[in-house]
Every structure is written in C-alpha cells, then in structure tokens.
Length: 202
Image 1 (cartoon, one colour):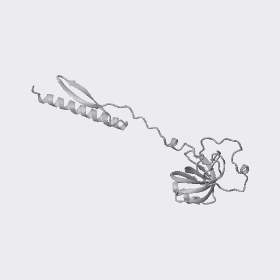
Image 2 (cartoon, rainbow, N blue to C red):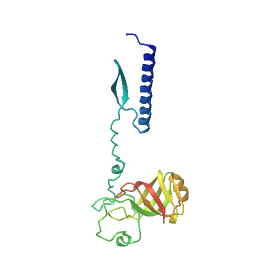
Image 3 (cartoon, one colour):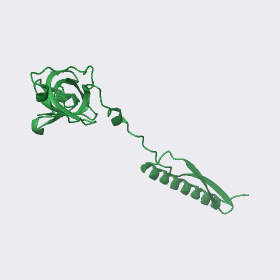
Image 4 (spheres, rainbow, N blue to C red):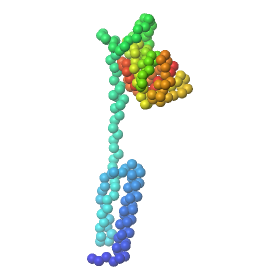
C-alpha cells in the first residue's frame, strides 16, 4: 500500500504530537516527584494504521523508613542504680551528708527516661566538656564526673539566652567554673557520657 505525501505528512504530525504530549507529561510528572516510574503501552488507531506509544503511569510513593535514632539512645545506663555492688562512675566526694546532697526527696523514684541534668564545668577538651554533675540523672543521686560530647548540632547559650553558638564554636565561650544546664536527645539516666543537644549557662 502506497502512502500519498499528504498521508505521510499527516501521520508525521500525529507522531510528533504524541511525542510532544508524552514529553510534557513526563516533565510534569517529574516535577511532581514521580520520575523513574514504570511505563505502560497504549495503542492509538488512526484509520487502518496502528501506533503504539509508551506513556508513564504513576507508582505508589515509597514507604518512609522508620527512624530508629531515638530508640538507639533511649535505653538507660546502669551507673548509680541503688542495688548492692559497685555504684559505677567517678563519684565526687562532698562534705555534705547524703540527705543534704540529694536532688529529689528521699524515697522518690527516678523517672525511667531523663533528658537533662546540671553541674559545674571542671575541664575543657577538644570536642567535649567535663562536668561535675549534681547526680540528678542517677538513681542513687550521687554527684559524678560527666563527659558531655559537643556535636555539630549542639546549641550553647549564654546566661539568659543573650547569645547562642552552634557546635564546637561554643566551646570558646565556656570556662571551668561555669554552671550549666545540659539537655540531651538521648535518655541520660545512669550515664556519665552522652552528647548534648543544648547547653545553657545558669
């Protein structure tokens, strides 16, 4: 069967139109975040001639993976539990009686999850501070030496929140003797070493 020049031009225009529509659809779907999607075949009939063209069809969005970063740091440590044996950690000797040094009333249970504590800075390191903790994150309430890691996400604030510094840059504004309130994204119960999310001078 011979095709006349008019039919050839008509068929060429139809094919160009189909390709243009496909490209426009693909660009639009890509902008909608649906690129790299499976294709399906559709068939277009013009007169007694068949054309087959692949057009994209949307697929279901991927299911996000569960974030386990919090659960990894949500387990409590074992230091300072009141059972018999070694209390653990570097205990700080004080002249106060145990009852005077307690941060909670006697016979008050410590929460299973604790995110903050406070203390006095005793030394500075390259990416951490050493703090004489007040014992609020331990069951036995005994003060211990804490190693507080400074990460790129740690926010260090001056007293009253007058200024804040991000990450290890904030170490330049902390000095031994400073009283600080420390907050972590992890459960710090029974732990003497943990990363800080916030450090506030008090």
